[in-house]
Image 1: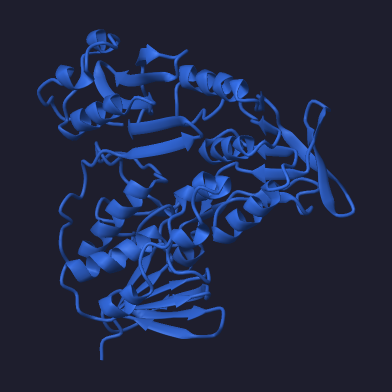
Image 2 (image 1 turned 60 degrees about the horizontal axis):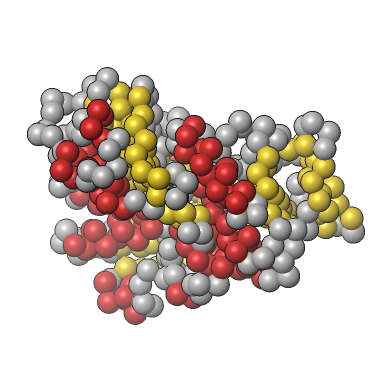
Length: 424
């Protein structure tokens, strides 16, 4: 009897991979195992609607409980896979996994969708009660309960998660300070003009933002955090600290298998690892640039998790994915009423064009390299976002000298498809 497919990681990518196998006609056993006690659920709302009470935690499940049995998917929750080995004989990619409960899970095909874990601060006081991280359902539940008392909140990290949580806490009436070690917010993702806009916008809403603020430790009393110490010798009082300084891909199992890992599990455009019989998808991976096919990038987004999982399912069945490369990455970050939508990857830009009303909090920034459109950051301008996403999907462009006119719809400026994009 076939052991079927084992998917390690009950994440968005993991569930999508299982569903895609069924959609592609696979009738063999499919087992999806995850360390959390809950079935797969949406994570993006955790730092937004869940913290503000606009969404309940129990509403985040992707599928109704009956779905898994109906689809022939065996779902194992609350068990962590601690070991995995490939068989010395038998079908390529077959083997056995072991969970922390001692359960053995044989497989003929293996997929790793293990995600990423929060990067933790290794400073004095980091283990004090009230120093929190936000990555999963239980983290969000604890934070939401603590925010009900309107504590003095300090957010360490001025990236998407940190700013989303800061906006949520501030909307609930809590005093909030954001500490960012770099000299601007969201520095890895957006241009300085966008960083400065968000610094000022959060400030207008009552959040104090401190840049170039390196954290050296946490103060506490009776086991609870009371403040954050900074490299310049100053101190910020705190009843609750949320650390959001990025994530680390989970590569432990991949390394057990001898798979190539470089800031994530290295996969090709078809989601195959360095052992082509094993696939991986989601936040745990690094992959070729999705537009150019060159270089390696790590994309932490719902869109990428879904697309990679679909490609991985096809690869396990020996098929080419419907679209192995050329898909336009897109992301979003809703920080209160500031809705940032991103299409494309701006890395390597040499020019950016700003259009719209920054003071009115409705503007966009288009990124170019050597005259070619790369990406857009759209703040409360969804039409600009969709126009650029459409253009990039067609391998077309929007002339930079015309894009700054905010009265001209960007969709009317899309040119014919251009030559293949240069290397990333």
